[in-house]
Amino acid sequence: MSCISLMAEFSGLAYYAEVPVVIFDIQRIGPSTGLPTRTSQADLGFVYTLSHGDTKHLVLLPGTVEECYEFARDAFDHADRFQTPVFVLSDLDLGMNLWMTPEFKYPEKKFDRGKVLAKDDLEKLAGEWGRYRDVDGDGVTYRTLPGTDHPAAGYFTRGSGHDEMARYTEGADAYARNMDRLTRKLETARHELPAPVVDEKGSPIGLIAFGSTDAAVVEARQALDEKGKNVDYMRVRALPLSDEVARFVARHERVYVVEQNRDGQLFDLIRLALPAALVDRMRSIRHYNGQPIPAGAIIEPLMEQEAVPT
Image 1 (tube, rainbow, N blue to C red):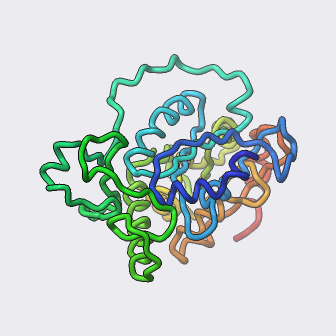
Image 2: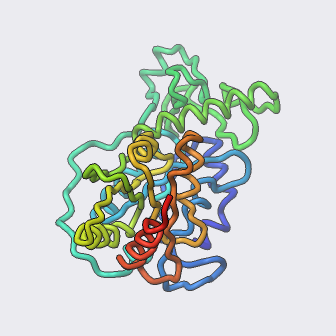
């Protein structure tokens, strides 16, 4: 994580210049050196908006060792397809402990390099194309790869102000158009990233979690079932948040967000994404002592809050 902190400016460069890159963050306790051998989920908010200015990155949130493998593979497709940094956010619990897991499956699908113009494509366009021009309306532009044998293949990859043709400019309108397009691209990506995993039994109470917290949530739900307190469950697997998150909250009277950080970072991100009428349904359960969260750290605060008349 210290390397990511030191290189925050470069993540903003890759976001604004639209350079594909994949970055793995195996979270441990901070701030600063913190507890370097203990686990945490406290980089979520930092990584999602890493860099100065208006920046939002694609973040994958594996919850099992199998998903760490699968998301690592898929992250490269997402980075190329959306021409942007992709963070794979694991943690020390997943990254350093021993886990039983199914045998990894060899990937059958081809790599997806996204909107790439080859020499023949440039010939058809008569050499007229703009590196940062959105012609499909999805915010994702076309690019060429280094070494493409065509005189129109080259362009400047700019981290400074640029127009649709990759020409330097500090023009206000060009900057606003570019930032609006990057927002459209984020919205396009939202529907292509791993969807949440949902298990519902018709309970008025819901749990939302991510990452390695999943194991504790599964155990907690079993124990709560035995107490006659059924709860539904959604495991978030990517940022930006799926539209399904708001629909899950709307289906429940109270929703508890369980995470391993002090400040309730996912809790805050979800509330920001919700319609105002749904915000009061949210509750926060946090565990942040560096040890992997146990089921009891979910059961006890949930039962305590549920015992209070609303």
